[in-house]
Length: 327
Image (tube, rainbow, N blue to C red):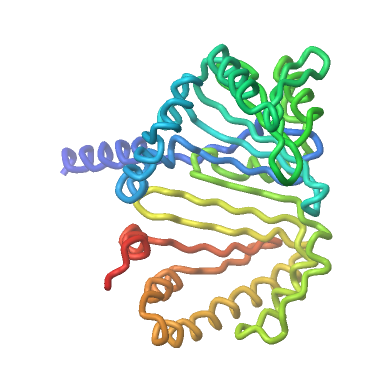
């Protein structure tokens, strides 16, 4: 009996060590101070996930093996499948016209090859690509046919950045030289630290006031009036996606107060129920929509104090059906 107990304890201990442990995310120090939305992509983890290996890895490799893509990547000394680790995005603004964004890519890079490849592109296509200076900072500018320019540069052999204006790039370069933490708002920092850095992807945003004018079409087949009334009382919004053999998703609304959370919780629960009643008719009209019903069975909503969380799962088999539907 004693031997069995010891073996059981050993098994529990081993399982605990093997299980993935959530670790609070730490905001990237290069994120812009004015950011009100931050997103994070665990690029390498996604590529190594079972579902990507099964359904997407071959297609990704095939796309990168194309003659033009292969030569360009070789010139840069870059293998995205191995060299890119994690990506951060910091954004601010409420409309497309005033949106500012900085993308921070971490991995293993060859700065000399990246600069030489960029210089070659500026000589080959000078109408769209150019090298610009901002003080002591050297960066490359891409001007698309339509829209605003994008600026980018190499910080060091582990970091590459791109942004919507020169100031974002120059500021990030200065931030990379000191040991200070991310200069983003304290509320946004707290939100990020509640998330798991081992997640495949997360995004969190300060949205207070941004949903005040949201109106849904009154003729919608699904009643969205409860959601419409609750959105203006939403202060924060977070999304977490975990990609393994399945895809797990969580959306969390941080509400103004507990009463607002209760109202949003009721509205979300009603929405899920209404969609559940609508799906059978949709499947009858379009049989290929059947996986939607299976996904909906996993959807749950939960209210805790001022937070409302909507969660669900897409199992690997359903992904396969969506990618290669029968018939």
